[in-house]
Image (tube, rainbow, N blue to C red; front, side, top):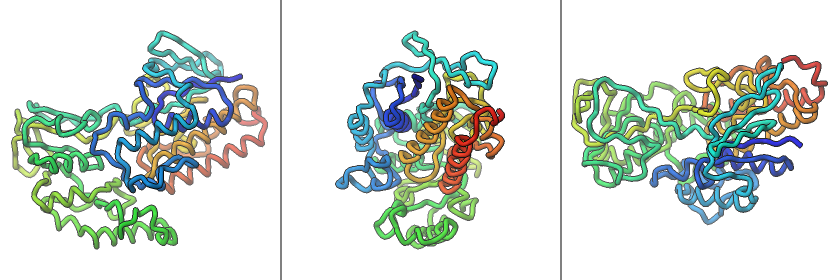
Length: 428
């Protein structure tokens, strides 16, 4: 019987394990930490969901009805812990064991077609017929480089816990996505002198309209995606105004919500109005504790908080096997299959806008269909090759949900057709 490997026991890894358990397949899971839940174990304490509890749970495993609309980091950890307990997933996990190296087994066929060799930090090497890679994309911190040197304290959002990480009283947040807004608000609410760099304007979306999360506004579903975008922009304007209502805020450089990053935060705007957060333009250079900005102004800070994103890293796989665009592996098959690699499934390397756990189950189930095609063919049939010929290469992590769902349907259709065709008639 074939055996599979799952890398990571975070939300995507749990979805992968549940899918493999339901299919009756054998597998090992390796988790470098001592807990399930992935980045939710180390995220900053002020973190809450930006999607509502009603729509964010795994399919068939809703969050408790008495939970808050937007659960905290602690509640999310409990949710993933409960999920693992309910389906007895922990027994499959080797905790405190990281994956050091993943290599394709020797073959005359496409890379990965004979399976993969996995070497772990406990010194063991095992061979697997396929690998579900769920190591996450929110851990390898990305920091921009600026001329000069900042001599105060710097902390990335991936390492930030709470305001005890801040030295002094003057704080500059670099990055204005969801994490940047959260960190600026956390500092302002705790009476730090807080500035935030916003180089490009955003549509700052409220978490609710009329007290109801947008995803739960049933009447919105009666409109097309484009119409929903327009309606949402009009409601944003009515509820929080425009960039002109907030000193220093640049205008959005995009016309629609779909064309810009999904920033869901009202509290940043609240504290800007109350004078507790000031907006700064781009950075020109550092000089000691002084930050020089693109508008010619400068200011001293004690701490800089970077909320500047993460690298999409697969440290256990040689880069020779990956083709990247803008730092992200190119993929097909609903962003699951890296170009040219068979039996290697990226679960969670896509962040289709909206609730994330349901996405992980969808991806894991598609990967399972690929596994079944291989097993039905006696061990291997070409899947990555045909998908590359049929589909456009995907490089994004942040992607509009309707676009990704179209990719999902296209992939399901392609796999269904493959299942009806003899393996030898499908070229690689």
